[in-house]
Length: 152
Image 1 (tube, rainbow, N blue to C red):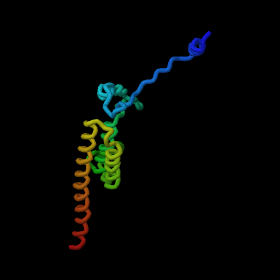
Image 2: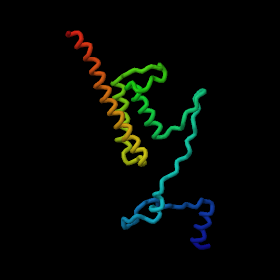
Image 3: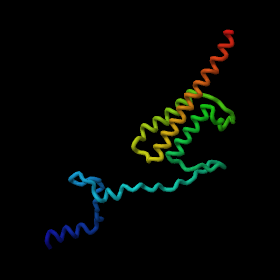
Image 4: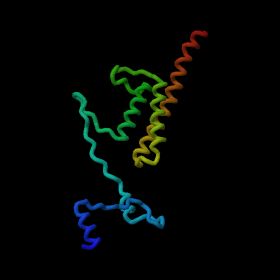
């Protein structure tokens, strides 16, 4: 029995190992053919609704998460009634914090979002920041009016 025959007999019980090179560039720094076909957008699995008591909630993805934060900010700005209290309250500190959280998400996810998600985040932030400035000015004017009446 030769040495080659002996090694082949030993390997019969072991599973075959397959090595797949997933690098996008070849040894010359050129984009490999396999990498060119892999750049197609990945299909995300369908989000299943979550059930919470009697209410069915939509699946969570980046867009729904950012929309929920934007809704919170609008609630704190007094643009949307409070979901539990059913009244309108203005809390500029909480509104600013929520808007800053969306800005933080925009910074931290830069380059990792698709075009629609980037556009959504940018537009929501722009709208929320403009609303914040508008309502801040209006609130400051309301606070000054009673002081002016006291002076007269």
